[in-house]
Length: 142
Image 1 (cartoon, helix red, strand yellow):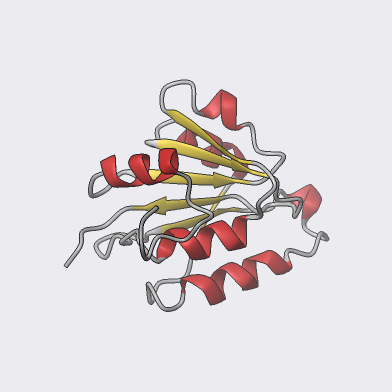
Image 2 (cartoon, rainbow, N blue to C red):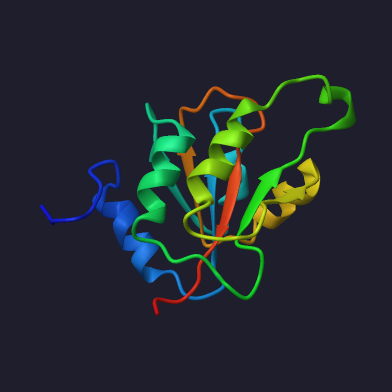
């Protein structure tokens, strides 16, 4: 056991977060995200039974966000889903506020998938909210 590491972060997850360098990206995917497909050339981690908000909060306690680029990207709703409420986005904005002054970048769904295929790692969660996927860009420890 270690002190100061949120218990939701598994040893495998901690290893991956530590291995990542400045500019590397991490996906935290909801339960519908095609994580195994997107992680074919990267690392797939499982956090089944956990939601994205609780994992995002834990990761941001130990994961520096990039200050040179927008460090947070969300999957934008498709036009056909414009009517769907996405209250989880407000929760994400609240969670990231202490760590960046930038608003999350909204990335079109299929562009998000392509970007996800180039990330260092993908964490799959049991999150049931729709459009609850997040990409984080790692910064440097100052």
